[in-house]
Image (cartoon, rainbow, N blue to C red):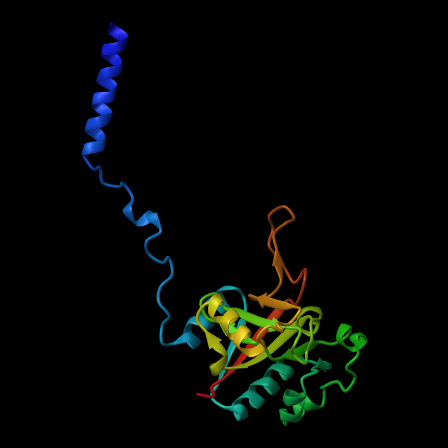
Amino acid sequence: MKAAASKESILKKIRKALSESTPLPFPSSEGNHSVFQPAPDDLDLLFAEQFGKLQGKFVFCLNDQELQLQLALLAKQKNFQKIYCREEDFRSGITEEAVRSVLLEDQSPEALKNCDAAITGCECLVARTGTIVLSSAQASGRTSSVYAPVHICIATTSQLVYDIKDGLRLLKEKYGTSLPSFISFASGPSRTADIEKTLVVGVHGPKEVYLFLVDNS
């Protein structure tokens, strides 16, 4: 008899609870809103901020002439003796003697292994994460941005996108169903903290990454 009364009491409480709605304790945690902010107008500033947080070196150039001067200044400051570059557009466009004089003619893997820096382009830049998107379809191939101790990437403001999904959409529009076999998302210099949780830079790739962004708007 007591068991039946207890059961009825429990069911009564359940019916009452179901008839009265209870507010959610954390309404914003239901995933109804995006966790990301909408894309700002100044993607170049956002990229520079995020890229800098990842230990990347950002250089903004108003035009190609300023790019040449900034490249020459970097080559002089770092005392580069061997610069590797497979992308003909960049090779032919470099006019500053400080860079041209150390630009390697040899494009072999052995030359890449022994160079001081490598210059590449990119597919696009993801502003929200400060990421350089590269692919095997570029003239620089898979290895230039990885094996050189210093990676110098040259990009334009028209290559800026807000989020990774925008970058992937751009690649699909560019290549259609023939996507490159290798797509890399590089966010600053290579680093790992696998060994005793100590951050080490340059273990699996370049120790320094420079991004020269040329305004072509």
